Image (cartoon, rainbow, N blue to C red):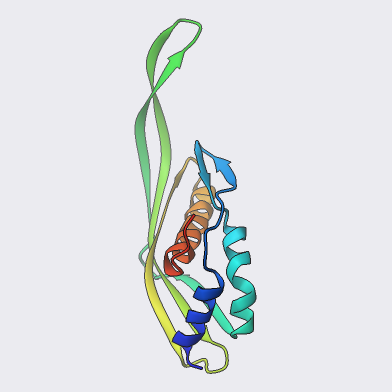
Length: 143
């Protein structure tokens, strides 16, 4: 079986709809661990590896400020708050490798974007978000 056929087996095994079971920042979403659970057994069975990587020299880190309207319950009035965050962006490549024939590879360009007030959290959340959505979209998994 070639790489594309093996990936097809993983896609078939991951079929269906994954539940949005986690909440944060006002959103409900499917956590990365649920997606990995849906595909990792079949990836192992098919002898497939997936390697995410950042394209060298593409990472940018930019200060990012915006205004947020808030409500003061005590004084009963709206006010604007300035939020200072960091925006990180990079080009990524997800590489599928057939472990039985390591020269059989499929490279898929993707992107990383994250923004938070802490640079390391920004980077980590960007990686997690990119990985989660790459897998969901690559395998056409509904949530």
